[in-house]
Image 1 (cartoon, rainbow, N blue to C red):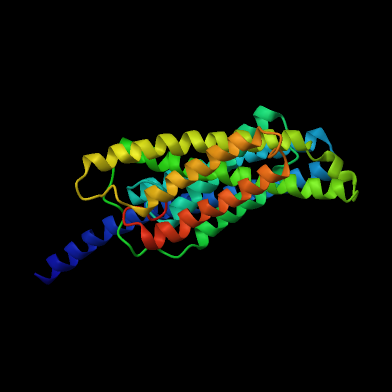
Image 2 (cartoon, one colour):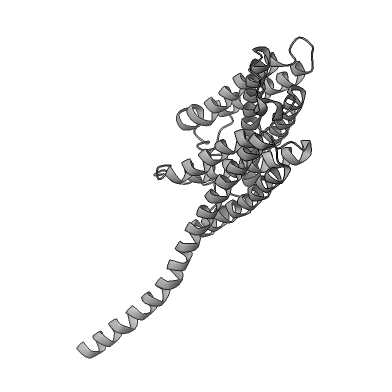
Length: 297
């Protein structure tokens, strides 16, 4: 009997050891992609700063290339984590912040290629880096993940976070606009100021990012209503919906007013900065304390 027990114990220990090696490999892979992503984003930031200081086109192109590599690595980091947890990458604070950083980088890269302007990369990359690193420093989520699932819900959340990314990018561009305009008015000009985009181009880039945010949040909100209509346990009377509609109206007003002579320029940029403060309020206070069905999106 004892021999059989010992023998069975030895047999039981073997599968555990064999299974441990693949598990360790998975753990190493889960750490590999975040490290590669952080390094790529950091190197891209350095290259963009170097490009802003020297104006060398090769340096700017390398910054764009490394940013693209960081996006690919970041995508696989999100994918590996989703597979490991058997859930979507935005069910907790870490995933939501990490996905926001990825979509922010993706939106900026698209905007850079569309407008053919790399000078603002040095100002955008710190925000991408902060959100990516903050995602790894975020406390563990002790709340149970949402019971919602399905393609409609997935598109609803992804488009909502994409909208936040578009609005965040317009916020950064508006700050650059206000800072550059102030330097031009005070005649405090330097070599770096002349390498920044013209004010008109900054305004067009801000409008483009706001347009991305408006389209995304409009479609995402519509999908959210469709999803809520299918489930009886969620209510249409959620403070998040009210704030979301307010954000839609504020950014629609920005696009309308930014095209008028009275609001074009600094006044429109200030309005864009104010609008993003409402977005931050929606993403933090409303999600965490007022809404019952929205936590991190």
